[in-house]
Amino acid sequence: MHPYYSTSFSLQSQSSNAPISALLDNSHIISWNPFATNKFCVVSQASVHYYNVKEEFLKQSSQSANILNDELYDPNEVFSVVSSTNLQTPAKCVAWSPESQTTLALGLQSGRIVLDDSQRQEIVMEFVPRAQRACRCLSWNPVHTNLIAAGYEKARNDNNCLVWDINSVDAESSVVTNLDTASSYQTDRSDAMSFRYQAANHSNR
Image 1 (cartoon, rainbow, N blue to C red):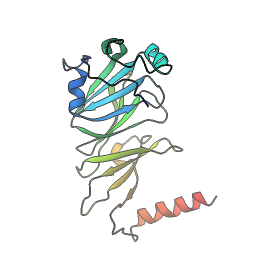
Image 2 (image 1 turned 60 degrees about the vertical axis):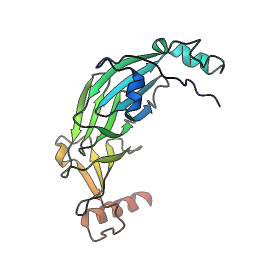
Image 3 (image 1 turned 120 degrees about the vertical axis):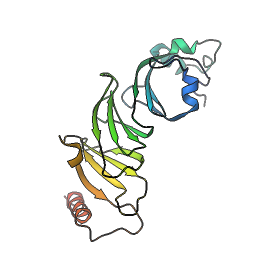
């Protein structure tokens, strides 16, 4: 199976003079937008860059593998930058919103979770945990799309999984439940027991 495009190219970003090849050298994440086949993001340390792929290129590349080379396509014509966002600290993980094709959730080295809107070109929401630990993974609830789960680095006396409610006005009080992902799971913790009880009742309906 041939890739759509395999090359290094020098597409300039709006926020810096660095080519995309330089961004990829230090990037943590590259993620396609699940709502649009021609959109993707590149996360490079504390910067997020959003790109479009030319529709004509996608249509022709799906019909023939012969066009997938540098001689027939100029990368600077195929790829175009949409917007860029600078973050407070490097991002460790991303998750596209299940409801908005322009909203990307990013888990930062500081533990904060930010919702970045590429169309508005601004951070629209931010969640701050009690402890500063790197956020390693994010996952949106596919049914209750206002909930997003975040996994953090192991801490001795703190939980490793937090579930945030983006509909909450106060970010610090938007923790739905704290789940301890350590092997020594504390089953006597009331919030965890309550969460499991509610989940069990919901699944039995």
